[in-house]
Image: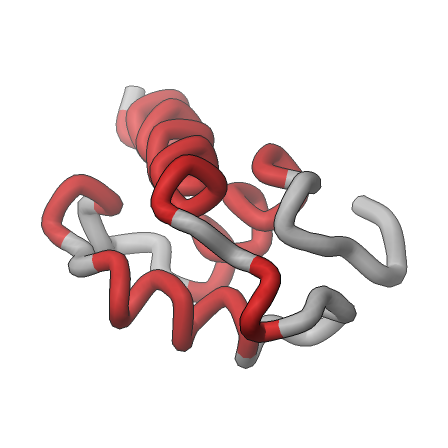
Length: 72
């Protein structure tokens, strides 16, 4: 994983979220909480105002895939 990542690094963010919240089903997380959690991640260097619904959805789906792989 890169030392720094931004909103467009959905897979890197997904891995970091899966590491930090291993028992959380990403599909149950509200976008407001997801946004907050992402901006609080170590290594996140993006502008907190630089997200949008599409970017959050892409991150949520990447996290969901990571979550499912870890549950297998």
